[in-house]
Length: 268
Image 1: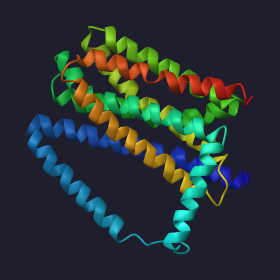
Image 2: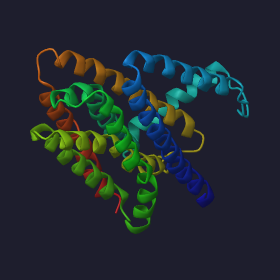
Image 3: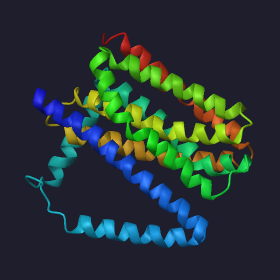
Image 4: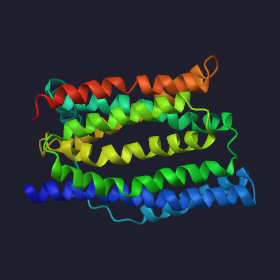
């Protein structure tokens, strides 16, 4: 069991680290393409990269141990949903994740018009995200070290969310261009400081037979929250300023903060 937990922890840490390293390269490449050519060229380059990524996955071997019948999958899905609904820790953790994704997705959707208000050049958008990715690269490794020192991880989760709320509030009131860029970079990196340890913590409560199904339920909920964030931010942007929506994104983190804080009292 200990070996399995270590494998899970290393997986979430390493996948986050590699993803952020790739994002640094991609953001710097995007900034240089926009500077040397135009934004339209960037779309073509992105399409080519996605095509080659798809080709790599197409030839990847399927390591699934067995195929399950559709009825078995549906029954397992129902059992997993009922298990989540009744579990005192898994359910609130998923709800906390949904609000977290909803908030950060709204900021991600609006970061360009937000920086545009400060007169940040288009080419600097890539540099801003590169800074965020650079801050994120060390985050999983640092978070792993923090785990060894903090007994109650939920306190760390709550503290991370509280710091993120403060950073977003600074983004609402600042008038400085460089502080605005730093705020976006810090918000982008926030997920890397939270997700690897949160995922590992979440997995500890999952029965082995339901692990993949409950994980899929959580991922599906996060995708729905992300899609809703884009829709909500798009509608609100027609009659609210970018800063007000930024403020709303910070407010949406309060349920996540309260959930982590409440759970921390039960997991000392």
